[in-house]
Image (tube, rainbow, N blue to C red; front, side, top):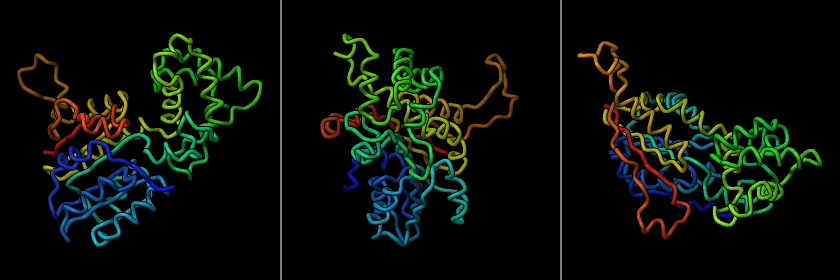
Amino acid sequence: MEFKHISVLFEETIEGLHIKPDGIYVDGTMGGAGHGRAVCERLNSEGRYIGIDQDEAAIKVGTERLAPFADRVSIVRSNYADMVSVVHNLGIQKVDGIMLDLGVSSYQLDTVERGFSYREDAPLDMRMDQRQAMTARDIVNDYSEMELFHIIRDYGEDRFAKNIAKHICMERAKKPIETTLELAEIIKQAIPAKIRATGGHPAKRTFQAIRIELNHELSVLEDNLNGMIDLLNPGGRLCIITFHSLEDRIVKNIFKKNENPCICPPGFPVCTCGMESKGRVITRKPVLPGEKELLENSRSKSAKLRVFERR
């Protein structure tokens, strides 16, 4: 299958990076190298692009698509959680821009056997890195009812989380749940028919929750944003595209804290905590897709871009 992925908020992200021809730029979620190619086209022979992805298919396609720029490209199969060590291992201490396009790619969703889609029948997989042993099947069949309830409530923000967890446990007691459509049908039965008729696909939120839990998506983001900001040169920018409120909230709060880290009581006449600002938030409100992009790519609907600049 061809690796197809339409880069969301493409122009806005490239503009947000403020690319210098001789700068060093890191793409922590390279995917099909859509954004990456645009960066490489703006670099001269002194510039450098570092593409990181944990997905084997993305590494293969990114390497092929960026072959014309091989003299300025380094591609590493890794999780962006290891970005700082990846960059340092390449002999680079600081970079001029970093971008992350979070969530699951169109290619991953459309490759049925990867098990990300609740609309196609496939084994319950959902691994972004297929070197990982644990799959979505393990979560669905081995987590306790309480654990399932918590992840569906917290990561899926589904108000029927309790009932969905209960139904999953009832069904797996009869036999293990093996496929995506089996799971989607169980979820459907746990949600009142009246709600099913209006609220989009009933399995969407639960599938999101399981995927986030399996791939540690929120903890990886939360634990590594500060390190990325520290990796930037003065004037360097961090551009992050999120696809749901949980990711966006993490990015918004960490950007805000890095802009204004002071912990002195509000009434203090002068700051005594010694916490210094690391930069400024460029996007007071997130950048959203325009009408044209929404028409051309329905998957861009929930995308938000936030940009931080290092001082």
